[in-house]
Structure formats: structure tokens, C-alpha cells
Image (cartoon, rainbow, N blue to C red; front, side):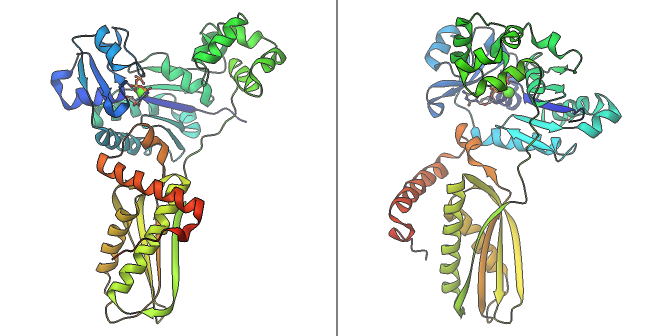
Length: 382
Ligand code: DCP
Ligand code: CA
């Protein structure tokens, strides 16, 4: 593989920084976002709060003890999603090779760009995000994903670190093994028992003895310890869509029939989205008339969703705008696109509460359907 320019970007104290941005009174203060919706743990702590030893995942009760004058906020997860999209919009000016990682991190492949322009595009990304969105981001540039992600963490907040093939080992070998992606407290402890504390020590340990301890994962982290990582940027395909369509035995004339059929189709699409764990951003309807003339209409959903009713509402309002009265419909189709992996949203409890309730009910129904067959529960849509 030729030399690559992989960039990892990571927003600083993301949720907490958004709160400080929206309420200037919170600037420079210890702000902690978390609480009940996050199961009673700290989701984000501003850098001011971190001085008191606070960090993500810590129980709120402990955080209050360590930082009694901290400002505790339960947060507005929906807004964080909006900031995240805004930042992604800026990133996509530079390349289509973007792999988002959660809400506030992404890999970019700037291989072509970088060779021509040096660090300039990366500095421009930082500048544009700060000027247009108001948030600071830490950036790592390196020949691969592992090194880029490690680099972005080295100089937080507002960091900018370049790791090259030449300086890589010098930079990473003195660092503790916990800097390696995927090496959590458990693995750190096991390595510690073998006397392996730094990445350099890990690199110099024979692969076979690591394999005895860690199985197939050993090779990956051993390669990482030598600065090696061949993984490509995997940008989620915007082309992918999930759809359902139906040609009717008899052409449809009545509005109520069309509405019912459309409901069944969106129900199916919603079910498949949930099964494949996607949220859709766009919905497209397709209508074929009895004379075979076919039209499609597309619109964006108010929020990314996998809730059948919300897909239906949008699809129906698109359908109603088409002048089809007096014509007969031979085929109806619905497809959902602009798919985003549900896990990002769920993990950060980013779904609005009312929508989340609906989703949970649907997921329960999906389970029954899976167990007893799709026909076990049918939903009447009128
Ligand atoms: N998050 C969460 N629960 C966690 C960890 C994180 O809800 N246990 C959310 C809140 C964070 C966001 O995800 O703001 C990003 O997580 P990071 O681990 O990247 O942490 P921060 O962005 O807060 O801080 P840093 O500056 O270290 O990146
Ligand atoms: Ca972050």
C-alpha cells in the first residue's frame, strides 16, 4: 500500500462543549453532562471539570463529590446530533472518504490532498469548524488509522499532531499500552501481569506469547505496536437503500386503498430498517399508473428514523401531492435511503424520548414477528 494521509478528527469534550457554546455563562466552568438518561453516569465533562478527576463513565454521585461546585446538566441529545451533522457537512467538503465513528469522531482519507498541500487542509478543517460551528476539534494525521487516532488524542483539546512513518515508533513506544485502540482495563491488566506496560514493550514481546494470552487479537495489537495498520476508510454507502414495492392484482382507484397499501409498505420498510439496524434520512415513493407511466418523489425525513409511522406520514404526504386522482395505480413503492447505523444514536441516547418509546414498542413487536412469523401480528393502517 502506498503512503496514505489518514486524518482522525475528534471533537473536544463534545456534549459539554455544546452546552458551553449555547450558554456563554458556562464558558470556563466545570460543566458535566450526564444523569438519568445516561443511566446516572457522566457522559461528558468539560476540560475544567476534568481537572477535578472527572471523566466519562464515572457515576454522577462520585462526580458530585469530586466537584461539588460543578454545573450538572442532563443535556439535549437531539441538539448534539445537529452539531454532529453540521461538522460532518464541513468534513465532506474535503473528501467523500469519511468514516464516522460515533457522533463526534471520524476518519478521513486525504491522501491526494495532503501530498499537494501539506498540513494546510487539516488546519483549514479546524478553522472552519471553529468559525462556523464554534467547537474545537483535535486532529491527528498519520499514514494509517491506528496512528491517526492515537495522534488526535495526544494534544487534546484543540490538538494537531502529525505522526509520520519516520517518527512513529519514537512517539508511540514510550506510551502506555492503554493508548492502543481496543486495549481496555482488562487487557491492560493482563499485559501488566506479563510485565508489559508500554507500547514498546508490547512490540518487543514475541507474538507467540501474546497469542497465548489474547488469541487472534494478539496479532492486531502487535502490528499496532509496530505502527502497522492496513485498514481502509470505510465510508458508509449513501447509495444503499431499503425498499418495498408491490404491483397490485387490480389497479387501485380509491384514496383509502392507496393509503392502506402505502401503510403496509412503510411498515415493511420500517421493519427491515430496524432489523438491519439503520435509521433513514430520506424517503422515496414510486407510483406506476395503469398506463405504465411511473413517477418517483423524494424528500428528507424530519429526523433520521426507523419508526414505521413516521415513514408512513412522510411517504403519504408525498403521495398526496401527486395528482393521481382519477388515475389508477398499478404499483406503489417506498424506499428509505441516507442510511445511518442505529447504534450511534442509541448508544448516545440521541433519540427523542417520545420517538424512543414508539421504537421500543415496535422492537418488541418485531421480536414476536421473528419468533412466530411475520403474519402473527398485522397492523391495520387507516
Ligand atoms: N459519551 C457518552 N457516554 C460515554 C462516553 C461518551 O454519552 N460513556 C458521549 C459524550 C461525549 C461524546 O460521547 O461528549 C464523545 O465522547 P468522547 O469519548 O470522544 O469524549 P469527549 O468528546 O467528551 O471528550 P474528548 O475531548 O476526550 O474527546
Ligand atoms: Ca471527543
